Image (cartoon, rainbow, N blue to C red; front, side):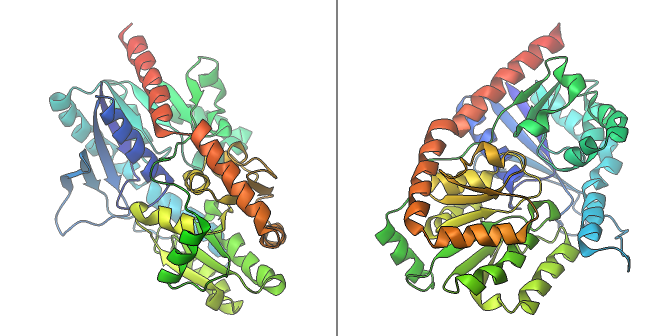
Length: 412
């Protein structure tokens, strides 16, 4: 088959959608299929005057269409930084909607050369008008990764908008069960749950002795537990609640160090500034290492040296970060939202706590730090689950079945 992957999130930016598109593409290529990625970039800025680029990355043909950022940032004295971040982040994400005619024309030009069988979209809102245009010529599969869908679904009065946005989609894939809840598509058998996957050959456990050696080489104090939070700094990821929990943890368990990645993600500057302010005002910066955006190829090392990995999200699909940590044999502490309960066996491979509750995060972290033997046993259970239930080959095979079904129906 010949597939066009359409996404507004792709490497070199770091995140779950980026990793999903990359690994799914690589697996499909290994299975003998042709895949081209079209990346509509609203966060990356090209050299002056450049509008389109084409490059190869690990054998993947990537076409980037550069879209300048929205020029109307929202500010307000009476709005919280969290709300301002949501609004401005949404404005940035919808920027490709204004360019849908240009983007669809570019893909149709590629289609003349590549003869695509379908377009597989990997964002919910950014390219939705692009695929509406493309649906006149090509089948559309949508993997619904993002939180805007959940916000719309939460309010019944907005259901007509949701139906309008998705009515052209031939098939919807949800990486968590709540992301599959689109009634009119379910009634037509055009929805499937396919969990995210993990590369169990790259994300592997290490023996404790080797972990201690790695920590020392990386500059961390021997014998001090490490807690990792690897999240894009966006409001839906709940990083701010993890940061607020740090002071509470240190009051009861002072000999612990926190690793937080993703702080070089500038998609939500107000949210980022609020997090940095809390770290400073709470006086906990000395117990925290801000790692920036870690290249995906280096992430396994940070999972391996950590003792506990925290997923403090307010909304989440099947967390790729969680799966990668599990595959490295690490216990998880996650919120009871979205697809997180689908990967954490509460009390066996980790713990679940309510979303947006810093005190619950802190209390459970302290409990885990006080029983490191159980934490290591949880990590071993997580590795077993990763091997048995989650693999990118499985994700690719299930996705390919949907492609075949969609193409067959489209020809009828």
